[in-house]
Image (cartoon, rainbow, N blue to C red; front, top):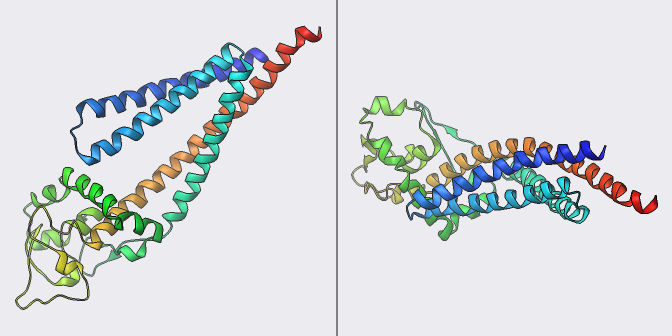
Amino acid sequence: MVRCSNGLLGLLNACVLVLAIATLGGGAWLSHHASTTDCERFLERPVIALGVLLLALSLAGLAGSLCRASCLLWLYLLVLFILIVLLFAFTIFAFVVTNRGAGWVVSGRGYKEYRLGDYSTWLQRRVENAENWAKIRSCLQDGKVCEKLGARKETLSQFVNTNLSPVQSGCCKPPTGCNFTYQSETVWTKPNGFNGTEDPDCNTWSNDQAALCYDCNSCKAGVLANLKSSWKKIATVNIVFLVFLIVVYSVGCCAFRNNRQDNSYPAWK
């Protein structure tokens, strides 16, 4: 029983070790090859931190199981339990904050438009924060989202039937309600005598390709639509990962209990 539980725990942690090395490799690649944009710096640090955590956890599990070090195995189980609780809490939180919000179908258009007020208050505050939005905007510009859309050179009839992504719809064109005249995908002319409307995004829109609608509420809503989709996928993956961690934790508990019994047997004997 001792050999079986320790061997299985060692095998599972060997898999985690491989994953940790791959994660650290990805973080190192980002650090070495990425430029100095805010977006790439934002991605680099969490990847490296995750890799270090997984590496330390897998090494502790391997040492505790193969060397039958009960103290090290106990510490390993404690950290693993905390990780399971945090991951479970994050998964629930992700489902809760992404429960609201959906695109609006526009009559005669192949794309949807997005409104910031449709999303959870917590998410709205995150994108409305000036510092956070500056980083997100940098990511959008670095990704050349609108530049790629503008390179299509479509006619108006082709454009209105295009299935735009939430970010393209919110950041690269003005809202349909502004009634601007189409020149190209990212160039729209305001009608003569335009004095603004109830939608502040109409005044925010600019044909400057560095500005466009990056500061519009519709752009922030488009980002949240993408974020909602990504978080839903992450939460689903987290459920699978949670099941794996719970299995590892259960095997670790068996190994810890058996190690203590095995270590105490000679003294009793």
